Amino acid sequence: MTIYKMNLSTTEPNNSVGIIKVRQYDSETQIFEATITENSKPVDLTGLTVLFCVRASPVTGLGLSEQLVTDIDFENGIVRHTLTDYDMQNVGLNKAYFAFRTTEDKVVRFKHQFSTKDFPYTVMPSIFSEGIKDSNYIWTFEEILRYFQEWVQESMKTYDDWYIAAQEELERIIAEFNSWIAANQDIYDEWISDQKADFMDWLLGNKSDFTDWFESIRDILDEDVAGNLQNQFDKINANTELIEIEHDAKSYPALRALYWEYGMATVPLGYELTGLGGGNVHTVNSSVEYLDRSSLKVSVPRYYKLVNPKVIVLKNAVRLISDHRVLQIEFDSNVNPSINLSLTADFKGKVYGSVVENSHIAKMVTSQTLQNPNASTFYELSQARVDGLKELNDGKLYTVTNSTNKNMLQVEKKWNVVEAIDRKYPELFKNIGAITLNEKVVATRKFSTIVSNTWGFGSAANSSNITIAYGNGSAWEGFISESSSTVKQISLPIPASCIQDDGCIHVLAHADAANETTVSALSVDYTNLEIQFKYTV
Image (cartoon, rainbow, N blue to C red; front, side, top):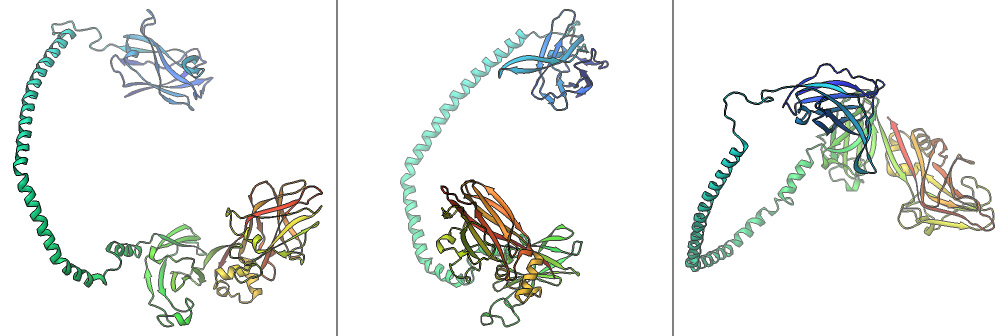
């Protein structure tokens, strides 16, 4: 390939491209690469069709050629055209230019847009440009065609003779094969019958032996061989994510994973199968992905993945406990790990009048003024109403209205944050030295990040607002409102300092006031409290 690079202007009177000479018949190997400029700046060709235009003989006006250009860098204004035989018809000086057009009325009809100024190139003759003038014999096309047609006719005659002979031979072979089948069919049927009888006799004679053998190895097999192989793979390949750990090492610390079953703090003493010391401790394969110099992700074989484990952060270690199974991640150096624990508090499993199954409480009141957090005027939602808050998109919607003029519907959610953490991670507070309720509240205020979420909407006399706020102990603050006539999520970050001394946070949802003709209505599909607890030993 030979590439001729040039700058072509649509505004300058002349294009200086230097001396360009190409050999006639060197088609598909000579490339004109042009940068299109306007006032010395590249032109954006987006949306345009580009054509390469040549008048092969400027003197006679013959040899016109107009070809579509397909190799285009539209944004940078660069076009590349590979010369064809049309562009090299005339030996000698040729003049060319690039034209840029748009289509008209979405049909294949070009509307001239603009073009570059002309630039010259010279086509040099090849050895065939002026014909052959010596005594070399020239084959005419008519002679070549005549010889070809005679060869085709002779070949067809030969093929026809072969095909007739081959067809006769094939018919003879098929007839002989059919005769052989007819002569031997009775013998074949008799042989099949004998083989079937012999097989049935063998099967009946050996069935009892096979049954005895299978029963002898049945206890050895654990499910199936493929299952056994899969179990082995599940204990070897460390490709199942276990936990993400932050640390203070500011490096890439080495670690190991230890596994054992039973032992202290895993199951009640009466259910301990291996004695107070638990089972033997052994290492398991693990892999580490260092997210940065302060955090890492640990993966273990699938067999050792624990479901909803309790997480205990120790000095230089993190211990995970699920039922009777324990997995401990130990660091080789002096590393203080920190853990991001997350949980969601909601009203799933809530029973009216009880805090045993679910310790959170939802209350309501209608009043012309906002009632203070934990005010005695709030009363607990009935079972039917609290059921509407438990799940998102479950077909149940907590909806309540009040038609008293100037009254506002108000719902208070009392989230027992400390109790929620204690139930999800029973050893957490003990592990960080928080034993009393006051100590747990202090730790939760220190290590927690809290967000309230409500999915719902409101309606009233002058708005469709639902407003959310949190209690600071004696009043509401942090108000945010959302106007919608359908269920919509509203999220409100809550400072952990708003956790009260009883371990609870109060969140308010209310609609605007009713008037004499329009009720105050509040609809909530689901509500929760997202809690992040990050701590370091």
